[in-house]
Length: 232
Image 1: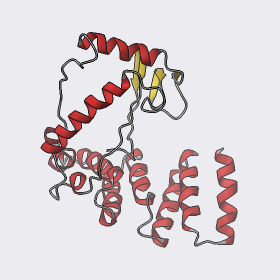
Image 2 (image 1 turned 45 degrees about the vertical axis):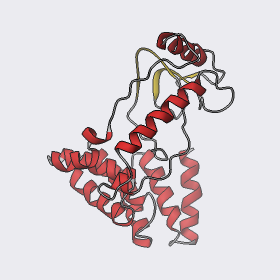
Image 3 (image 1 turned 90 degrees about the horizontal axis):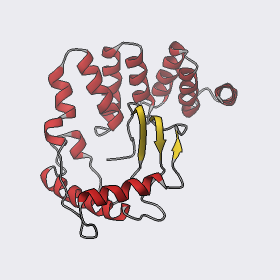
Image 4 (image 1 turned 120 degrees about the horizontal axis):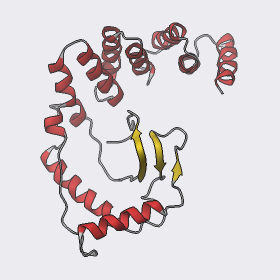
């Protein structure tokens, strides 16, 4: 729990005030406790001890955005990006900060939806009589999946159900869906290949694994805004 987090990290800092991760982790706990000033001080102390600490600058940026301080958030993003130009969190927060500061061009240069978002239509897979039949098989697979649970903790689904990774275990029609996604990905990467022209493209790794989730939404069901930090 949060109280346990405080109890864990404060004694560690009493023993070793230079323990960077303890400052960072305690700042995260204080943020959850809605003590933003103390959380800010913790992130800043972590950065004083290690200017390249992963997460401290980006968490500081998101804290500033929550506080309605986009200029401070932008400065924190630049700290993170100075060491890791492809940091997806920092780039996302920078786009938000630029937008809130009225610099739509800078936000667009990062997000670049016109270039990065592409739509692909699929013809009917060979194993199915029609796209409708294939979609029906996917629906049935998701609705009967043993991991389907309602409003699972720590997930973004609200007023609905979500599965765990459908690419694991018995795949059924998901195996066909994976092949379709893989084909679209190959086409996408030929159109938007790795390139030094943009920080996303400059740091793009080899993409070898596809994860798939199924989501079932009730009326007014939705996904809360979130990022998949380890994903591309």
